[in-house]
Image 1: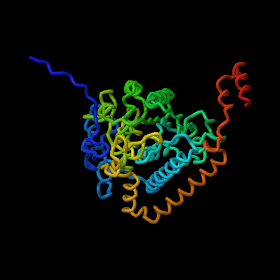
Image 2 (image 1 turned 90 degrees about the vertical axis):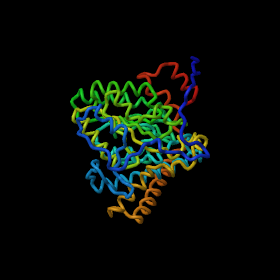
Image 3 (image 1 turned 30 degrees about the vertical axis):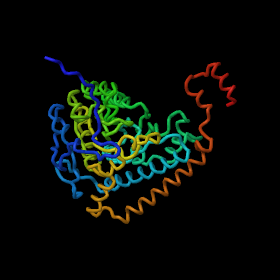
Length: 409
């Protein structure tokens, strides 16, 4: 019998430029259909939750199902306000990059709910190991916009002294671990921190964030193994925004199976959640945090979302996906969805929405002007090169002193 020739297979998205994306591959589930299990559930028994989709907001902007949480009104309003401010901040920084005031920027456009909902569900003292789209972790906790912009501009007041790429913040005093541009490193770091917290008998937990593409990294699997074996009190977040730098999430193993389902094989309770539903994000984050604090171990969460903009200011997504994909994404815009829900409950209004946007636009513009006083890339006034010689050795070696003298700094 003649043997068939082998064919090499490469996953392809269901939409390319000039053709509408068929989003049926997402296998959506109606709001309220997913069950809410006890926090001590075994990994094996979360199979349906890893393959389904936890949703709270239905098509009529009502909260339905077992995951409905009694969220205080001030938390709901704070969530919407923070998402609005984050989007405005991103838009201003994108313009600043186009004006050559910084070399690089990365937005979280369309993904704001994932970070905002979780930071409001966790406690002060918990530690976040973010990727480069979690700026709302800082913005929601009212971190200084001026300091964020100074870091982006790498100027004289950059708190990181020009030693990090723009948007790679480090704010340990607010539980925001130093950001790494090489994703997946966050997962083992968070697991190790969480293990240390348990060893000390502390009550603080860790939370880590990566994208769908980073699940193909070896660090990812290493972290899952340690989290399972030692029941680390950690939440492992995968934001499946459908695209890595320019490759479809199927290339990272998301075709034909969910990324959450892969966590079950590693022994972790795994959930797949609508990442554009603020109410679902908050409820699932509270559940996972309670599970971790009760010594039932880690939770892996796949947040289904969509990268509405380019991967970064260096990317042109129109080269590899339809330009109108975000408008057609079936899970919608997280800000619009929460806004409509709050209006339905008389907790918000169109008038307040417009006023809030204008107020935050003025706040971000004022912060940018305050930061620009200390320099931008365009002005040439950036962090002193002298700092590259410092904070490495207790006593600076002779060859570095000589090099510094040659630079005249």
